[in-house]
Length: 299
Image (cartoon, rainbow, N blue to C red; front, top):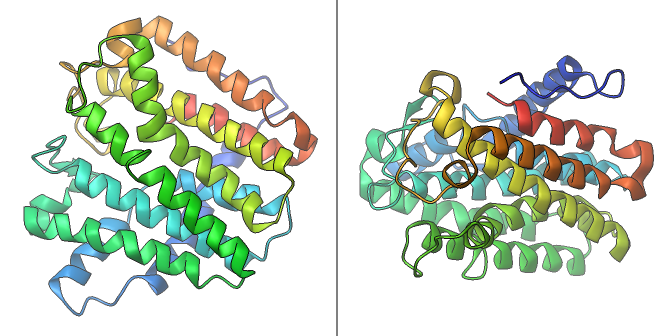
């Protein structure tokens, strides 16, 4: 299947990929300053799990949305770093034998392989409060900090990420239909993407309409991301993705429901909806439109 190509000259993929790499390097430096020094095994494992890999896509959404509202770069980067800490926690726990049982993450041994299961559990436990600590110390009005903390707590808790993980493990009843799967992935992936995209608007004290537009964009982006994640699990390679493939063969996935070609067509349609959500921002949203196309092409 040929990769989906946006119509030139609207988007320039090489330019976007370069910007994303530069941003990943910048957010890595910020995370270096936030994570504790390797003074203990726990701290070493935290740094191992967070640093040195990943496209930092969710953090990039925070950064780009914050630029619509002239948020101070230092504060936008710290908010983006908080999102990356949560993302790292979720991956560490997802990889555990009792969860997805994955031995490889971002091209290196998963945290529980490098350090053992108990340390991996505690790494996740430590990264969550660290993310909230970062948000609580932003140089922003108290009501803005509180709103970010409230929203993040919602999207990663028992009505968000954790609920989706329970569904994915088959611990909340049978998830057999495509509608069931959409609900599961909304909780597990979609609303965290939505938070990442909206958080820049929260920091920038944007209007409710602007916040809703970015949140909708992020949720749709998350759905397309999960669809393509299923596609790559079936058709990608561990060398390209930095994690094992074929692990979801026996699970209820978009790939199993739709097949590769229909899944790809559906993902493109959802990306188009995500891009449409950005109409309120006109030309300012060019980079977020590029993110949407990138979802379909990532390797």
